[in-house]
Amino acid sequence: MKEETPPSFLLELLEARSPSGHEFEAQAVIDKYVKPVADVYEKDVLGNRIARINPKGNPSVMFMGHMDELGLQITYIDDKGFLYFDTIGGHDLSIISGRRVHILTDKGVVKGVTGKRAVHLMDANDRTKVPQRHEIWIDIGAKTRLDAELRVHVGDVAVYDHGFEVLADDIVTGRAFDDKGGCYIVCEALRRLAKEKKLAASVIAVASTQEEIGTRGAATSAFAVQPDFAIAVDVSHATDHPDTDHRKFGKTVLGGGPIITRGPNINPFIFKRLVEVAEKNNIPYQLEAEPRPTGTDARAIQMAAKGVATGLISLPLRYMHTPSEIVSLTDAENCVKLLMAFAKSLTKKDSGVW
Image: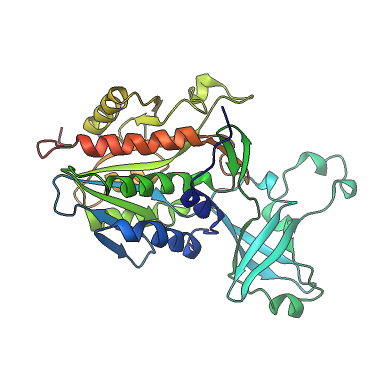
């Protein structure tokens, strides 16, 4: 297989720095690529982007992927100009130190490095411990607090400075495929469906905010849209790497196709229809069981207003919530195809009531 060229839309989303509550750069990418094809395009007070095509169609189906990512927020600057921070979203503290970061300020990007006490300065006991958050800092090369405050303020946010790379064939790595991958998939599906001549359904694509701190953008946008059907697109663990017990975590693989979730968070009609259209269109797929509310936007969507018939498909991903997540571009393409096939299969007679 030859090396694939990723779509420019996906690349620009991955390059956008958009920690929860500071999604400005990702919003700009969505505005650029999605607004021109939408019949109706809306923004809201949480920063969500809501695009509709065929707004008079019946039934309505909403696709949602979140545009926010993990980040750091500056909480304190000491007398020597070192910056301390709190985490935005679920970080693994063992991998924060030694990273280059971009701090997003009103005056532009300030570059820094996360630091901690070097291994040479630790005793044997310290070397076995994961550093606590307050034992890690950001070094911007400042000499004093005043020097640092000329460039950075408390409340500014930061993300890792890790870019996109092709590893081999269609296997790629980058920062924040969780969930720039899912955000791209739902928006790209809408962009392609906008070209369809015969589409019964009204299709809504939502690029949601603040998922990493509690599916907050999903809660408000799902309440506002109140669709007949909804499918969240996020990432899920590819468990095909070493040190994974399939008895605990199931088995899903990179390159195996979209992961379709089953469980109480998932409407039975949507699950059945996703499997049917995948098989009809020769789209490979994998199954994942989740016996409780999922840790995705699907959790909030299902419970919005009077309730929404909700499904979840996931992009298989290795090394979630690290600066170098790995996915297959072929899996991403098949997720787009699966969403399109689902939307095109809907008729006025379909219902999520059971």
